Length: 132
Figure 1 (cartoon, rainbow, N blue to C red):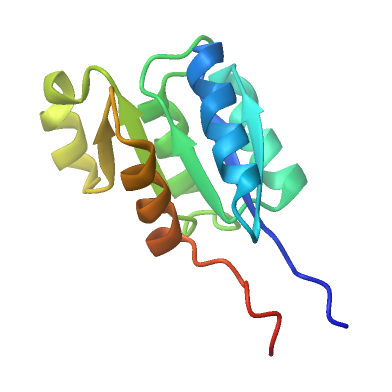
Figure 2 (cartoon, helix red, strand yellow):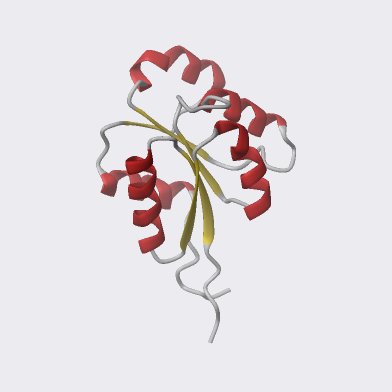
C-alpha cells in the first residue's frame, strides 16, 4: 500500500476565522496539508521549513505585507517557482501592484470556498492516485 504524499500549502493570513476556514477546508481535501502563518515576516521561513508546494497570501498582514512576501519568494532561488495565490478584500485597490508583478492568481474576499479549492487544485495538483 502506497502512502499518499501530501502537498503542503502555507496560508499567510492574519484574519483568524478566514485562516481557520481555509486550513480546515484544505486539510479536509485528500492530498493536502495546510499550515497557517499569521505574520508575514514568518511566512518565508515556514515555506522553507515545511517544503511548501503552494503559498496562499493575504495582502495586509503584520510583519511583511503580501507583496513584500511575494517579492522575497520570487528573489529566492530555492522557492521562486512556487505558485502563489492571493486572497484579499482589497484586491481591486491593488490592481497596479498585481500587474507590475505579473500576478494573475487573485481571489477577492468574500470568496466562494469551492472556487478557491478548485484554484488550489489547478495551481497545486494533489497526488491523490498514489501511483507513480
